Image (cartoon, rainbow, N blue to C red; front, side, top):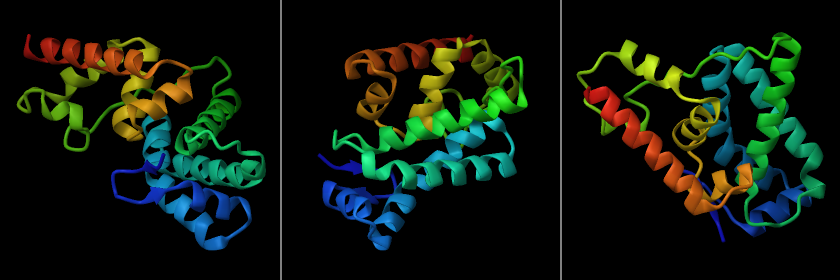
Length: 182
């Protein structure tokens, strides 16, 4: 099974194996396929470009260090995102001793799920609705629309079934849509 990001950069098992063997071009392919969604995800959490860049760099340094121990489970991108989430948790532990995290504010032009919502509604209302979601719901939305992970990748990352992830996201989107229309 291949992992593919929205820009069409593929990560097949041969590329991953070549990267594990230290092939610089394969490592570059991994970076090209994963860096943008990782950065977007991290930025959505820290709301600071410098911190998001640092965390992205830390993520890829950790990927390089851990790559020899990667077990081929056909979910490479989910594995990379787990490393990014760990780096994010370390960041918040170090910078926010009480566990306070920045809230995610989506740019409606960049997030597919928001295209279905009436574009004439105010950004303030959307921010309020996103803020009112439970942390787990916000994380699902971030992973799907900011990080651009597939349902399969999210399920693997969170240890849930794909259909459960798909249904949970659909329920969240339906609820947001109704609330935006109200």
